[in-house]
Image 1 (cartoon, rainbow, N blue to C red):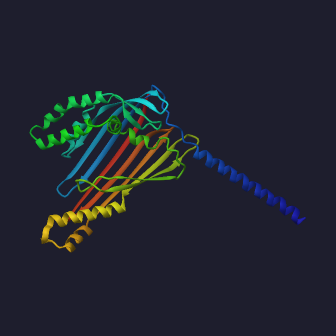
Image 2 (image 1 turned 120 degrees about the horizontal axis):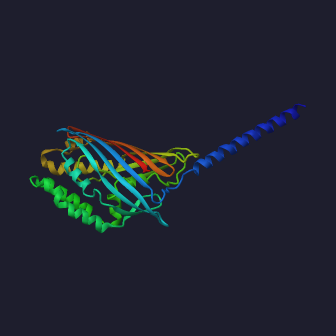
Length: 327
């Protein structure tokens, strides 16, 4: 009697355990398969708004700025490999005391109200500007009026001319990354094919916080942190910091330059001491919110800090991008 009573109970537990296992497996499979494609309706219009706050603490001054930008996106056509779209920069509002703001304001206004027709891949990432000649013509026509306010400041005028040349002298592929502002970033979280908590790592060139040419690289970990299989909502988080190996090479390069500049008046030991006291750090975190296959919000915060030759510098930048469908 004991064995007859015990065996069915054990079998029942095994059945329950198996059922639970299959249930969890099915849920995991459903979660992994829940990513919805980037598929905005043809003819739909979208408003892309961004707000960027920057606080730059330097030894000689403190600089702050607030930039609000607005653009309109229209889905014109679906192709075999993606979409044809029209992107229009509707202008920006810029406030603050940063000395470079007049240049930034002029550069942003160069393509204001100029329709940029482009082709994207299936994830919505721009791969080519289709009316590049028209866009370049608008930029060339804007150069004279944009540089006019800086006639009494030839150095700023030269920087402005160089900035404009950098926008004009690009091919259709490179223009896709420059002329459509936030579109490449938004596409990063669309049609990833990632599973929950999967992490993808990448290494990229990084700006030199001390100015001048870089040689610095940054490492990024991009993770799918949340998902809802029922609604298709997904959240991704990207964290970025300086690459340790490139940091070491950068410090050695700085040491050699200091030795060359100092001449015989400074010993190698003194140079090494200066370099060891240098500190460079990058802490960047970006959160993507995706709904129905389309990135609807991006929140990004980066803190870049540097200590060199007795001076401390820190730049904090916070950016929010919101995508809203126009009724």
